[in-house]
Image (cartoon, rainbow, N blue to C red; front, side, top):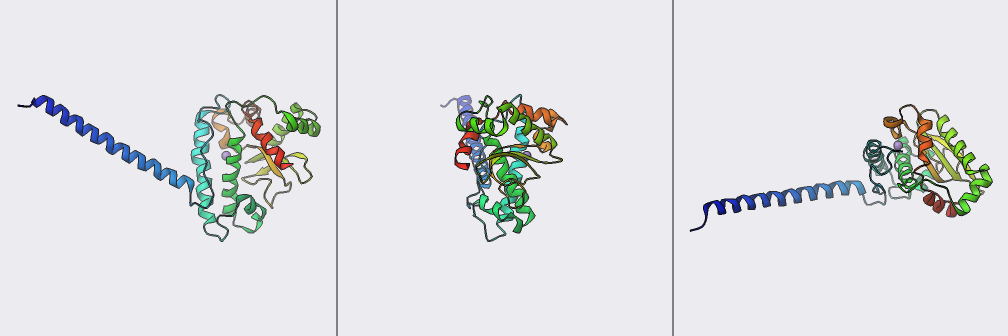
Length: 244
Ligand code: MN
């Protein structure tokens, strides 16, 4: 005769096992669904993973800001861009090409396409291993253009601090191959046909309040100064070479 307690225990274990299996399948399909929506329509617009953990840039950029910024703001720009571009006959066109003709397109594409693209760039310019100084040709170009790295940083921070309202501060390469600092409003960027100073961006910092307000409140300048502790100069340098 089988042990009643033993068989009860094994029944409970099997039930628990089934629950675990069922849960794993559910969680698996839920994350798959999230993944599918994140990669969009297959037209080449990708909501890329954040290249570091939410808390990786602490204390310069706090975990909560990173999470909200990436998972809510950036994701919303991406989703809204995909929705807006699907209504057009240029769905699938490289986004840099879309920016070249942005003056002829709906505002929703300008705002959300810019938001999607600018944030993807911005994440690439930050790293937990960042900070320090640029090297090689980029370092030389910064010295030649701005006088020194410190002078460049000061000009960049001042430009960012002075941008009224929401926007971005940029380091770009112009048509003559020269570096320049500029700012743009809202989600515009230097690739867009509508901005005054056009060029190939090689560095940007988001100066919307959502990028810094939880930690820095109204002190945008302090946020811009802290940014240099996480700046990914290798990424900036890798964009500088082809841009010039
Ligand atoms: Mn932002």
